[in-house]
Amino acid sequence: MTRRSQASESGCAEVEKGNDIKNKTETVSVHVMQLWPLASEGLAWGAMEGRERQRQRQRQREAREGVRKRIPLRRKLHILRVLTNSNSVKRTSIAKSTILRLYKLKLALETVKRHYENLLATRREHINLLNYVKEKKDVKIEKVRAGTFMVKVTCEKGGNKLVAILEAFDEMCLNVEQAKVSCENGFSLEAIALAEDQTLDVRDVSEALLKAIGKLSGEKDSQKFDKSCDL
Image (cartoon, rainbow, N blue to C red; front, top):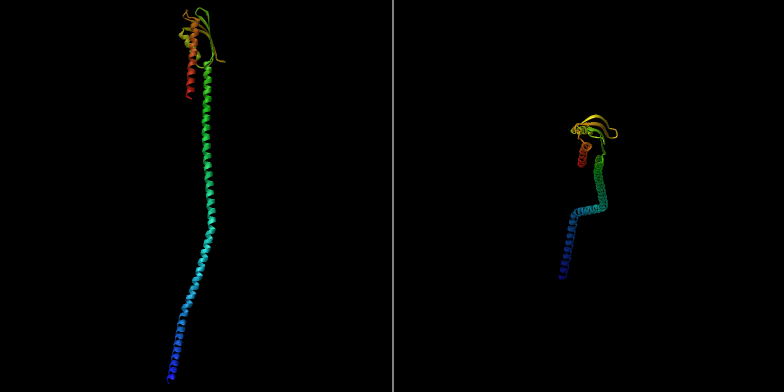
C-alpha cells in the first residue's frame, strides 16, 4: 500500500508539474502573441532609423565631398580676385603716376619756355642798350667868319634830336639862317647859324651840341636798362 500510494503521489506530482509547464507555455505564448505587434513595430522603426542614419551619413559624405570640391574652387576664385584687384590697382597707380609726371613735365616746359623768352628779351634789350651806348655821334663845327658857324651833326636817328639841337642853339643865342635835315640812314643836320655873341667859340658850340645829343641817348639807355632789370 505504501508503495502504491507513493507511486500515485509521484504520478500526481508529475501530472501537476506537466500541467504547470503547459500553463506556463500557454502563458508565454499569449505574452509572445501580445508582444509580437510591438516587436514588429519596433523592428520596423529600427529599420527606418537605420535607413535614415544611412541617408544622413550619405548626405554628410556628399556635403564633405562638396566642401572639399568647393575649397579649391574658392581658393582659385580668391587668387583670381586678388590678382585682378592687384592688376587693377597697379594699372590705376601707373596711370596716375604717368599723368602726374606728364603734368610736371608740362609745367617744367612752360617754365623753361618763359625763361627762354625772358632771356631773349633781355638779350635784345642789352643789344639795343649796347647799340645806344656805341651810338655814333659826329659833330663838326666850322667857323665861316666872325659869329657865323657851319654846323654838321650826324648820329643815330631816334628821339627828338632836332628839338634838342634847336634848344641848344637857342641857349647859345644862335640863329639858324639855313638848315637841311635828313633821316635816311640815321639823323643828319647841316645848318648855318649866326651867333649874337661874337666871342662864341667852335669848341663851345661842339660841346653844347654833343651834350644835347648825349642827354637824349642817356635817357633812352636808362629806360632800356630799367626795362631789362624789370624782366
